[in-house]
Length: 626
Ligand code: FAD
Image 1 (cartoon, rainbow, N blue to C red):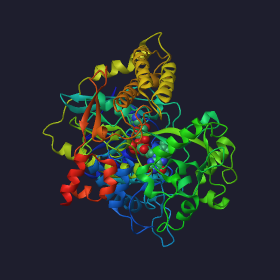
Image 2 (cartoon, rainbow, N blue to C red):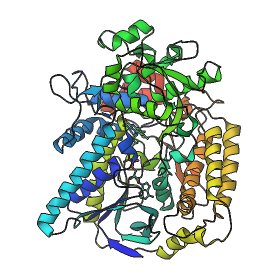
Image 3 (cartoon, rainbow, N blue to C red):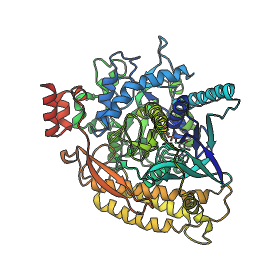
Image 4 (tube, helix red, strand yellow):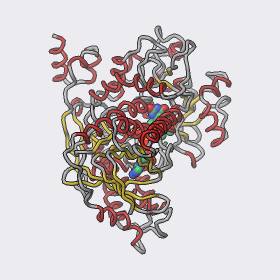
């Protein structure tokens, strides 16, 4: 087993991980970046639409307060308001910082960073590079890592003296010394050899959990590893019942079902129609949003050129609303031939403009579905996309409850409440990646002595177990059953009996997973890797299902058929998941969300707040104004 010593180990090389690692290194810490797939291959690179930041380049009325309000509304006020505040205030600086590091964003006519419309954002706010924003973000952050390595070479004669990348290396356990983090254990994907990092501080930046579902925009790495690593190390997860089903994934052909169709298609003018040709979203504007959205197609269309005097079209409602509406249309028999609805940009923009603004979408549909989106509509339907739930962290430092453990990006919870607005993830990664890197560095500075890694033998035995069983369950069978169960029983619309059924299945799958056998050896063995990942997917699925069963209301990315509508009783409740170190059972408890600070509360109109908040909270609002 290889062994390395670092001050900070960042697990994940997406936007959050890279930004955290850059910060830790800039604070003088010897930093490792560990990633399961190739360096540069992360969800961040797949992000299309852009990074939300209230720079006010396209509409000068935009500012952090408007962004904060939109984020809280999008999350149905269950957001960690301090995170939403920091995010709205700091996102512009993080985008400008990227530009200073070499990012080339699309420009406005007067040469500023261009910003595009997206669902739930009052003003054009997403800094973008065509529909390939994530690629530019990752390219820039990687370039920054290389620049720092070049500085280190100048100073120390070694490029990797202070920041080193361990790619295709999967972490399977966090190690502790007493209550505190002391290391991370994993294996190299290619050789199967084990690797140990001795470190007092770990930043989790492992992204999402989508691979627990059949229809998902997520790729193979997203098996909830960071969520599970945190749980097993003794940290809490919050908001796990809230999963974002993106309204527009490809539905055809079956081999690509779930692949994302960016919201930019709607932001740039694309409309949703059912099989009768109706723009059905006008029938699905909920009361809380009625005054903000157009009531006629004419008004919605005028908004694209005159935002001051018109309201936005309902195709740009937050994602949870659009996904539910599509689901309802398909269920009512008004779907497209392949079980989705139609998303049409061909009749809305000239072909050349579509190719210029949406080059990846044009390419994706041509290559994968033989559809030319400049000539005909796409067929789209909801796909499991993003988890709002994750590691409970301190907003300012990214610290989890376990000393030495930090989390940022999609693996952390709280920022987005019950539903994330599109574009708010890329900016979240930058804002909280930086803060977690700084938090970890400060933690290391405050330590009197380095902790000692314990539990290495156990971690090794756990990892090698599927290889040592001569016969047993096929990990692919267990995985498929889990994906089908979560999709069908804890999907976009949920009810008590189905969630309970899912929990029974998960319990049985946990037993089967303990018995998986992987044929072949340690060298590049995906069956073995999946057997290891199953522990994480099952743990995360148990959290999602248990929290979903408990929350008897519908809010954001959690819709209960048997409890439609938001409930005042649930308004302030956070659901907190934890497990014992062996992960044998997930416990979920309720915790009250702290009251919002007065100066933030008074950014909202009383009438609007009354739609969301409890009477007790409204009394706090009135007292703040008095
Ligand atoms: P990721 O970028 O997902 O990176 C996770 C990293 O962790 C990877 O390097 C992975 O290899 C590593 N990892 C995971 N497990 C382990 C392990 N056990 N050991 C070692 N390494 C591990 N958001 C927006 O704001 N705007 C958009 O336009 C947008 N478009 C999107 C389009 C698509 C197709 C998808 C899938 C998502 C999109 N999102 C968008 C969401 C956004 O991209 C993600 O939420 C975000 O990139 C997550 O970033 P992250 O840094 O948290 O993790």
